[in-house]
Amino acid sequence: MLKPFDLTITIVYILCILAIGLWAGINHRRKSKANAAGEYFLAGKTLKWPAIGLALFATNISTVHLVSLAQSGFDSGLLNGNFEWMAAFTLILLALFFVPFYIKSGVTTLPDFLEKRYDRSSRDWLAIISVVSAIIIHIAFSMLAGGIVLKTLFGLNMYLSVIVICFITAIYTIIGGLKAVVVTESIQTVVLLTGAFIISYAAFNRMGGWSPMTDVLKSHGEMNKLSMLRPHGDSSGMPWYTVFLGYPILGIWYWCADQTIVQRVLGAKNENHARIGSLFCGFIKILPVFIFVLPGLFAYTLAQSGHLDISSLGLDDKGHVNSKGIYTLMITQLLPSGLVGVLVAALLSGLMSQVSGALNSISTMVSYDMYQRYRPAASDKQLIWAGKISAGIALVFSLALLPLLNRYESIFSGINDIIAHIAPPITCVFLLGVFWKGASAPSAKLTLWIGSALGVVVFAINKLFPETIIGHTPFMMMAFYLFCVCVVIQVVFSYIYPVQHNSESSQLYWKTPLEPLRGPAWKGIGNYKVLSVILLLITGILYYIFR
Figure 1 (cartoon, rainbow, N blue to C red):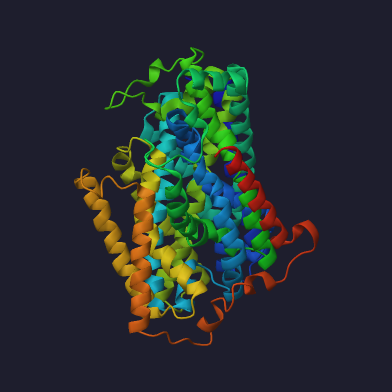
Figure 2 (figure 1 turned 90 degrees about the vertical axis):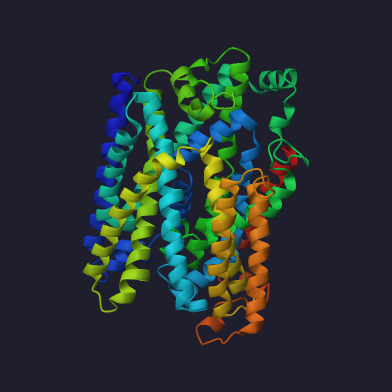
């Protein structure tokens, strides 16, 4: 249980975020009344690169990451850090190849972009899938992780405590719009990173440094926990080739084609701010391995050496330590009063930023991609109200999913398992649409329909018949196989139904591979090409060190 001082810090933090969110959103819209809907959903396209980068990171990093990456560090070492460092490559793809089209086409949503590149049917399908994925992946799983934290620290009912926090988040998100989301996310990112650095240092200090940790790993024959790239047949089910084949399928969907994430980019002041903001996020994504995953590994070695009492965690159905609560256990055992309150605030920051970002993207898609289609003459006021109502409904649906999602042994694995079956057709139509002139509208529509249905069928077989070959296929390899099938489907149907470009779609694919590098760029270190190379080099060096 938290001490009164820590509880006070947590409550004050939550109330401050609520006040700042309401002030930022309402004040911004009061100053800019020309396009109320545009101000509400995209902050009037005024966002600059620091806010974009911080907001991208905050929307991505939630309580799920703090809790589940520490859990994965405890269970399997640095392996799941691949999801953080591989993101750098997909963020470079976003900055170089996707951002120019998103900004140039002036779209409000990514389904809107698919309509401009393909047709209305593709837009409708992506809007539905994007809303569903936002509810499950970005909101429900974040709620679950937040509920585990609050139950462990406060002894509160998991569902009741999550409802209260999400209700507070929904107030400033629904009232303030994207401006409120981005301002609060920027603050929450700083708080979250500060908290993560504190727990990382505390674990490092209690262990006595890097050498004592490696000594414990050596004595238990588990030095492979420091390896990011595992050999074929590794017990984790995630050898190196699954990372390089499977992650891009998940990552391109998540970072380049998911409305919840990319909406921050769509609100950019101009193309360069959008590009640099995306790359800035790529640099920040280097940190989670050291401040989210590594503390979990330290917790493992601390437990093995008797410096961390994990008896309260209990055992799971397989007789292994139930490591879901390892992060909160570290907070209560490694930190003094006062800092515990800061860490709880950091955990709640992750939950609130993830939920607020997802609610804002859902309201945007429902308003522009669904409501406006059937009410073309809808006023800005009507669009905003449709968005607010849809956000409230999405929150209720997310809460209803919590008991079902809680069945996963690992939250992080649960998220990626679902993404692996959703992402392939969407990644396919975006990649081929941007890089291949011949990708036709009918082929995109059929790929989305067939690919999504195939993903659902494979997911169902995996859960109902886990002993089949499908059940034994690692989720990242399954994503790669489904993606290959989707590429074949789209290519075949593009030849059966040849592309018929209009004046708009003919401007939304790259004519040559070098064309993206000819866009306007800032001079010096702010040049997106220079930053892309630096990010590639840093990531490559890190992979070499932790290979």
